[in-house]
Image (cartoon, rainbow, N blue to C red; front, side, top):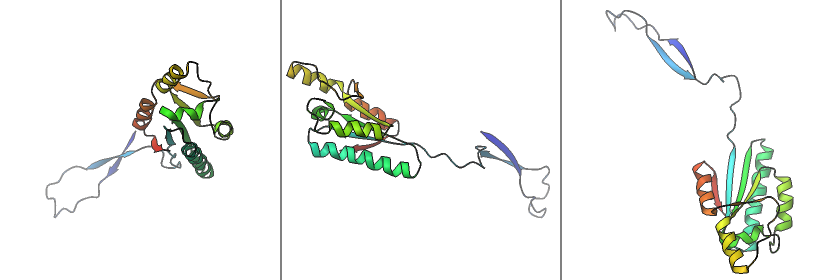
Length: 161
């Protein structure tokens, strides 16, 4: 941070008899007065916790709208979809009703991340008796709910699809 000394206007003698010396005020300046302020990155996380195709499409539609808006404004952004509970069906390559759409979306939005709850995945695998096949690019996190908390604590906007 840069500090700059600025002189105070001289007081009238009649108001301050016996005043000796000068007074200065410290003002804080970022030093970037001539540059355009940098836009903060827009960060949005969508939670999908249902195997309802309509809700999955809401998350996808929201990601597309965010992308269109901030691309047009030339502002940085990041989008993450976190699937937990029954919502993990969204990221399963064997049953996802939106698998092909997600593949196209990942190519269209480079800042898109897909996170699956590892706990929900383990429960489904135990129930079904086999490892779940995932869509390319899906990252398994230990707990989807914890991922949501951590992103919100870092300033991400939360949207429940």
